[in-house]
Amino acid sequence: PAVWRRKPLVAAYAFVIFRFTWGIPLIVVGFLQGLLPNGSRKVVAKSERRPQATATMSGAEVVRNVSSTAIYPEATAEQELYVAYAGLLIMAIVPIWIGAHRSIGQLRAPGSGPSESMTKQDAYMFPVFASCFLFGLYVVFKFVSKEYVNMLLTSYFFFWGVIAVTRVLRPLFAFLLPKSLQLRPFRFLFSQEGPEEKEATAAEGDAVVKAPKRAMRKRKSSKAEEEEAEQQQQQQQQQQQQQQQQQQQQQGDEGEKEEEEEEKDVIFLLRFDYVDVVCAVVAALLGAWYLWSKHWVANNIFGLAFSINAIEMLSLGSFVVGSILLCGLFVYDVFWVFGTDVMVTVAKSFDAPIKLLFPRNLLTMGLEADQFSMLGLGDIVIPGIFIALLLRFDYHRRDPRTGNYARIYFFTDYFAYILGLTVTVAVMHVFKAAQPALLYLVPSCLFFPLVVALARGEVNPLFNYNEGDPEPSASEAAGEGSKANKGKAKRTSKRKSTKQN
View 1 (tube, rainbow, N blue to C red):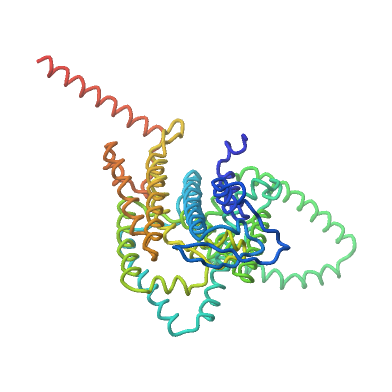
View 2 (tube, one colour):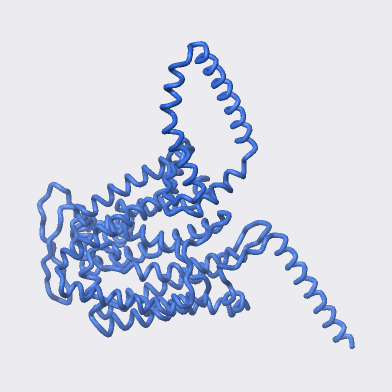
């Protein structure tokens, strides 16, 4: 419909919410059932007891329990693994797409951009700090009870998870709810007073002290004087109201400048409206569900929200900084997965939404699945912010007149990420062991954009791109284009003259 063409992000949000409510499992299972014979398509009713399904693996018969909510009770372990792999792959690529395009929305707003930008020094030190934090968690889990550590971490991630889900749901609810809920926003301001404001508050305090004395004098005066005073006050109030209305009409942009000056001394500022309140209530209910049940669907909701917000808000600054970060984390991931058991131990002990889970026995156990394949959020966010950087690079090179831009580097790196993650899953399936995903993602995410840049002759613009530099205006871009055309014309004329000679 036309709505999706006007607002393509709405379709993406609808897909994510549909995934939360059985979307991906039903799609994958429907695809698998289409490959199976008609006689094997069975669904067990909820009222039935748990039967036992037998599956043959390597010639040995294995007995497995089947839940009353089973989707396909006769599924083999191999089919269950394929469903889990497909679910993880889809959950990894969806937040990268949404977060990258939301970062473009920030650039389109005047005077705004990515909230954080990384420098070369940050990129060099990030793997070191990440290693210290990871090893610290490993030591804590070794000497402290996991229950107490996870209780503290769960409360921490619950607070930030509610905020993350609220930000993700905001565009969708703003589109669905009436616009009248967005007309009167609230403002919560916590600031520090300057010297002028202190003098004003002191003067107000003196006026409050003198007020009772003036009231006693008025009581002693006659009624006629009181009536005259009231009339004068009413006239003064009317004059003041007229003056205020005139000032409000004349101010216009001056009010915005005053707000900007006030925000210089602001310690904390929060703007929200009724739509944000609705989103926060929904996010809090989801958070309460996660605290109560620790269900894998609730865990994935928070994990996807964290991923989308991180990809949207974080900025690598330049292609060089992103390459340094990816290469450093490449070594970090390989060392802690292959060299030690630290990464796997922390991932299994850390009971918080820092990883995406998908059941390996979804078809036979349904919502009651208890065996999971996992993918860390770092394997989504780190390549995701690099892919978002390339999308912003494509947007930076847009046509200044029409605003159109070709997402060449974005699609190249996006499909390179899908290829790298597919190779990771394939290697993990063949060797039956945990794999450092960045071992396969970093080479693919760096190699393919460089190949495209070499083929198009755009290596220098790619390496020189810096998000801190101001974007050229339409007139400047047109001037540069005319200069380039003149230069080309001179070169062609010189070539013709040399050929004639």
